[in-house]
Length: 123
Image 1 (cartoon, helix red, strand yellow):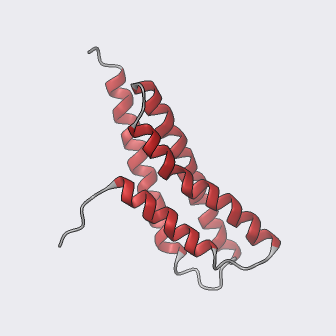
Image 2: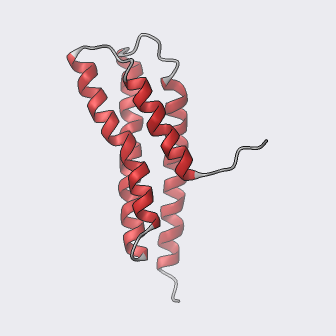
């Protein structure tokens, strides 16, 4: 059976996988700092996407999507830092998260661009 494309599910899966990976980080001060930052930034897009879907206007939609996009970019950098500093004994679970986060960044960028172009059109 072919998997249905569902952005909401992808965001939920990414948040879930990130939480699971963070639970395996070393227990050092640095790792725990990164863990807290990453948990915040990786779970925010899921909630922001839900808010964007219920936006009160096109401007509100774009605003919420932009914030989610920023959080995804932040998560991407924290994930790369985990690998670079070796905060996880086995970085294998992080590699697919980096890839998925990069894909989500591209999706949100395209959605924002499309929404902005529709904002500029007269109705």
